[in-house]
Length: 295
Length: 336
Image (cartoon, helix red, strand yellow):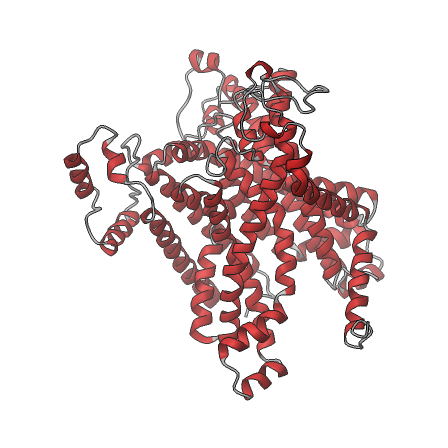
């Protein structure tokens, strides 16, 4: 246990403990944290816990179509007689997966570009950042819609579209960090002993400026889930019979006036998930920003 | 100041060029063949070939891009693959209805969102603040399209007090002359003094208006709160308070004035968001705007139409950004 008590680590652990303490002190943030953990749990065990696993993708039971919520079907059934509760639960897995992959891909594009721009400076910096500016000058949802429309409708393409419209935010963020780290002593030292530029960027600069980007990315998950649902609603994301929430709300449009449960529950699922991520993000921001942080 | 504006304008033009380039590149990676779509499903290979030449698709890509730019400067966005009408003409027809919605939501964002944010910041960590924050976080977490369906369910299906969609009721459309002066229905009916049409149009606007305003109201409230909180920690606020100035004066004329930069930015940016959100809302309410237009274009893969709306919205957003930056530049502290 020697490494835990080492002097370098002790303040960091203290800091982490303080953050967790501050995070859980705000009741709203605590509730959000619990909800997010619960959602992750549901996403992981969804195939096992849903009451009607065969209803997730198919198996039509037309005799049970558009039934209101009951003890048999908690959230009622859809136009093909599928259990909406099972489909909404399974949708958690799809939404979280999509959001994680999209944000991950955006990070994969954004981090190297931002680090290269910030660490290199000069023309390279200027070129990368002007390209970033152009991407940032599209309204957030618009570029995703356009890309998804041109790539053709599928969940994978929707994910790609979101990633392509999201990376510039991370590039800008990490570039700012990289510029300030570039002048630090350890980077100069590495340069002085002849470390290749490439190695300096990915071995020294990226690891030292990645933390705020990861925090930002986790705060973005709510927005990404909302965007993915919107794309599916427009017919540009998940295709039937995928139990994706936005798609379910979209299909429900033909039936919801006489079957309220059909649109209400998938929509509520989107709302609760996005709300939980946003509240958690707000809490994170508050404790990480020294201006608003209180001990 | 002048050099800032010139630099900002130059960057704006560069960005617009980039927007057009990206949109153009997107159309070149389409998996489908626009020429085949242009002539319809029963065309012969010869007809498709002829269409390819007619549309200029046989030329090298850079020639196509150059021609596209030239057309764009002349205000030509190409022809819709569905109707074979100029996209610009169709946009013009659909735009007024959308602008009415967007304006309404911007007014709501300013006059509801801003006071909410101020209230929240002033009562920080009291129950009123918690309530406002929950409301504003909730508003930006709601799927807009779902809000529309939800409101229809309650106010049309259950309560039966508001229409489900459209801009006017069927009987009003049949019985009255619908004035066409500016294209903005509310304005036109007022100018014509036709209050029956005006009232009907207004009633039809309530549900789509609330739906589209939800997000910007929440966004503006959130931003105003955080901008104000940062400023309320400043020394000069403490100084103002210690002079014994009324809290109201401190808040509204000392603090809010200084947080106007970020607030103006977020209001203008929210116009851009709202414009894109109409893509999701208008089709739900059968609202005859560009959102509805692009939603149906997406379904039938009408690329020139999608591209036209994309370029238009992106340009609107770039201009709004520019306006926001210029507002900030009015602040003497930013001037260099």
